[in-house]
Length: 202
Length: 202
DNA sequence: GTCTATAGCTGGATAGAC
DNA sequence: GTCTATCCAGCTATAGAC
Image (cartoon, rainbow over all chains, first blue to last red; front, side, top):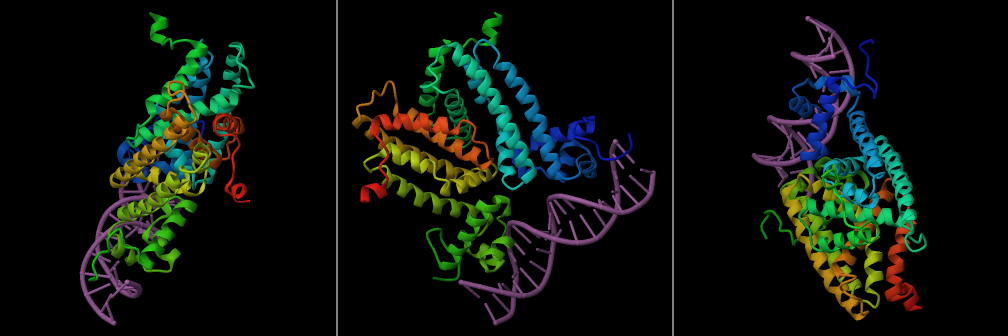
């Protein structure tokens, strides 16, 4: 291959290292900290390599989002095929790990058109996948779709989970245990107690 | 008063104009667009006045947040003393106006300690006020606090509302109508149909 | 594929005239 | 209270040597 700009699918060691550095900077210090200078410093690589691999900072952000989103969509789809799809969805929604990055990217996307379009597309794919999996589960439990439409269940769970994470980030937790209990009571009424993978294995 | 730095309580015309410009820039282009140069350009004032009135950009952001939060807390407290507190809360939570600004400020607060502390304090005051007002309302309706703890109701409504606004901002609306209907069915079961102020007046 | 060097701009902040 | 002038740091991006 000639020494031309690499494609998105490419994942050389250098490219991955740059994305890793970008991810860490973004999570720890916010998107404003993700600059060519700081990427170079954090990865031990050269400033100019950012442009060699990504073209512009915009493309770097898109590549970073896409890498995380693809991994996450796959893993979530897997998790929702297990024996307790509602518990699995709830637990994944409440994970801080991949969520912090998402929050920064969404804020950043407010003024980056291309990134925004990418996030929109993936969000829809996530939602459709969740609706399919959870829809099957609710039907299997014999839930009345008039009383509990799958879309309402999924969006409400996602909304509460995201909101709790956002408030936790600014040390506001008033009412959180009660909200968690409300959701978990609903889940428990359909799937019983949460069975952790550790418990299943043991 | 001598020509020294003005206090937060002060609201000269120039100071207000700078805050107005900051607010507009932030809502329309994100917090990264709020710079001294652009504030000056947008308000027709001089760059250096930002430092005269606010000291640092950090203080400007805090002043901007505080101005909006104080207004908003007052107005919300008023709204929740009306005849339909749940409808009032829900409608206010779903308003886009003051919410866009909040989202930007919260993102910005990730790496601005002082701003974050300010947002934390106000968020708690909001929550406490909501719990007091909605708590009274639910008790008045004879709602079983074991089944529907006031904290769970308030946090869930806030979470769903905020999430819908965030997704709308990136053009994702899958399942939104169903989620809205789920919440509004609950409210309707307690307060009946929403009575708009227009309808009350007429 | 990785580096140095540099252009050209924009940022926060201050000094000091008026 | 408002302005000009200015400092210096940091930013994106490109050219071109190796």
